[in-house]
Image 1 (spheres, one colour):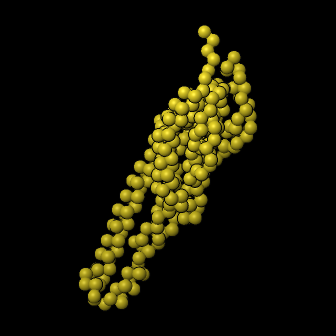
Image 2 (tube, rainbow, N blue to C red):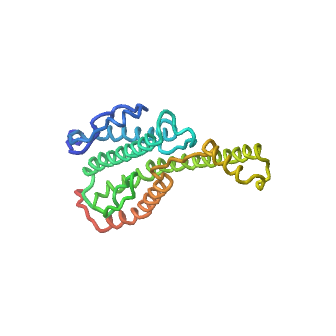
Image 3 (cartoon, one colour):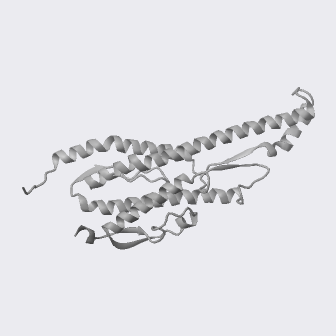
Length: 257
């Protein structure tokens, strides 16, 4: 009987039955209202989990969220800086949409498993800091969300954070190398004495500086945004146990023995 129970929810209209690594697959997802069995919703939710995991694993390679370029060569791959920034924003929005839709699927399924309510924080979104007011969900949903945040979402955000930290180290290292190369080139022309022909020295340095200057592109402020989302997840995990405990102590069930 349970598998025949139909539920109304928002689902992704395409791409749910594939785990392709093509970014174009993420872009084809469209939200619409539909009906499906709980079994189908569970399957689609698992497929979304795989897509989210693949997306995060590809950050830094196929999925671009940050980058840098040399000022004298304003391209990143085949993209201009402006195009790259728009791609970063689009990728971040796609990740947010996947996570939100996964939560909608999960919540629709879990509503059939519990009738009691607990006051919990809002669903965490990755694109912005979430300032929505708390709302009531079933205990089953609260527990499922805690497990999802602990076991899946937090490790994914931590992975993005780690990749950004490694990227930042590469950027800083390369920037310092180029600065040293710039000074070496200037010294090769004017000597190591900075007081020798100071005006000509500065003019020459400014003229060639673009060849040694890296421009950082981090339009989403990934370091700050991911850290904030990790903080919200940790707060949710820390608080939910006491909320659930209180709900289970104050609500009653009728057991037919």
